[in-house]
Image (cartoon, rainbow, N blue to C red):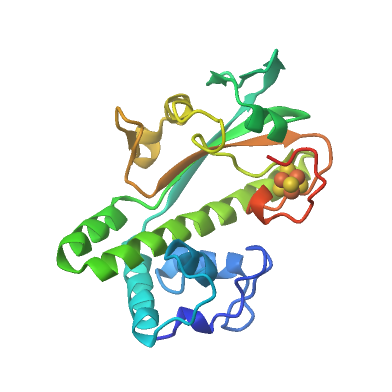
Length: 251
Ligand code: SF4
């Protein structure tokens, strides 16, 4: 079994990282995984961060468990993503995105100079929840690692999808801001309802929202990305990972 810890690529942006095998980029590896179900471009650092490791040495047995869990997730996940574009108007701090209206200082700042938005939804599918549920009963150590690795997997999948969108929009002269999810900062979690309805999440990718705004399958995400005519190349991993500390759009 190839250890994900052999991959040398996790400090670099997803579109530039190179994999262990043949210098393949994350994009190449993602496309291969989507076709064959093997060799997902894991972000080891992200998995370890979710597991609470902060630079400590990883015990060999934990490393082996992580690898095993990653292989299981590669087989169980069936990711899908959908998106739609809407005009954006801002009046007296009310952000009107047609499919939802809200007030959020953080989002307003991030969407400054944007004339449109893309609402985005993605999921790893119900197979991952079945796996999480099974190991929640069978072996808690694996269930914890599966939670961490599936969260990292969803992030990497969304980064890859968003990077593709960013490149497409840039060809049309639009600069895409990083994704911003309801529940982040002061962007109300309730806005997930408007996004879910606008994207027809249930019908198109099988994602439902509970009354308490939890998503099922659990490894799903909704977000808004601004589109601006003003040139700014954002880090697809978001403002937290971006080194432009003086950026006036920073959330
Ligand atoms: S801080 Fe970076 S990622 Fe965030 S809005 Fe500015 S350029 Fe984009």
